[in-house]
Image (cartoon, rainbow, N blue to C red; front, side):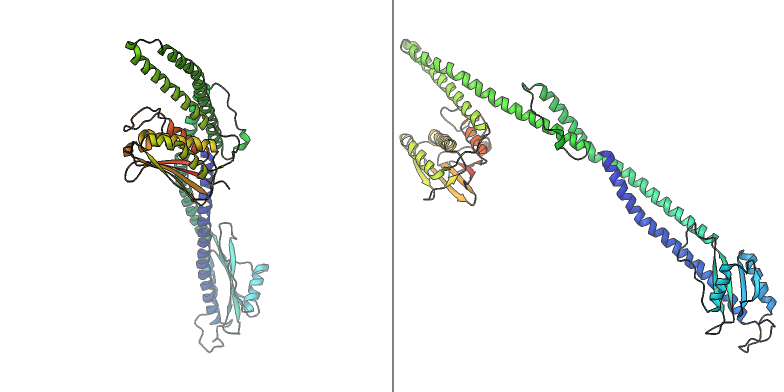
Length: 474
């Protein structure tokens, strides 16, 4: 993956650098050919003006001005230019015959074509741009005379060597700058790709290490997902495969843990029941001096039996439901369980109220699970709210959700312990009496299995409020 990230960054950087360097190089060629054309056009114009002021006999020109230089002056100027710049030049009259010639083959077809164009009052054009591999010379033509009267022509075979060399040097500078930029980008890209990929590689190694150690301790071989499901770079595919394998191992271990808890609790339930029966039989013959010890032993056995039963219920609640169960009428179930617990609450000196809409409402939760939830919550309220407390049971509809709550006006729970009430075996410091600390854990597990949630908060002005949110049955 690091190599792929580096390649992508380098391709992108190369495209950007080329998009900047190529137009810059071309603009250098255009600027240099512009200066080249201006210089040679100025030279051709000079010789055209010089020729227009002379005629073949050296007498005044048709313009009426006295000749400023003899014919030999034109030829000397042409020869001096050819020798100084090493460029051929020819000056012809209106009939196309040479008046001055130096360093240029007059009979060449391109020269004759340039002369013919200049005699038609057309100036020769230079290339729009120069490159190091352009032609070594170009023909610059200029007409002699002004207006519509053409008295001759000047043709210069301008050498492009100097201009092409300047363009080559400029291109080399641009290429060197682009190369240095790409080298800098490559260094940055290498560091960036390493920085991006290193955590992924380390995470993959840790997942592999954890998965291998964890997998060796599993009692059964977990099912593996086919590798064809994974797409993307090799590192990502490897991490996905390792993560899925670890998730499968954890799921297998969790299932094995739940099975172990359920099997252990089921195995302990029968011996505890037998032990309780024997204690009852033994209680008939226990002397008065051992009555208290017998009573405490019986109570501990009952407590242990309660823990075993709660562990069985918790293991069942944490087992995912394989089939969809029909919902139930939450209002009817609340009314039924409130009536069932009314006598127990009356004995404890409590009262209960129901806050619910009058119409039936279906909740996406099996009735047995809802009964277990209400029994656990009402049992806790009966045990810990205390005499004189008021227990409120209710629910409300909210679009596609239903929120149910059970609250009381008892002493409540310290604020710092509220988030831990749903933990297994946790009991609040204010709780009196017997308990296993599994009631709210069972409620939480049943709510999550149905796709719901549980929230614990302090009631106003005092007490405890348990809220559960479920989906409505459509």
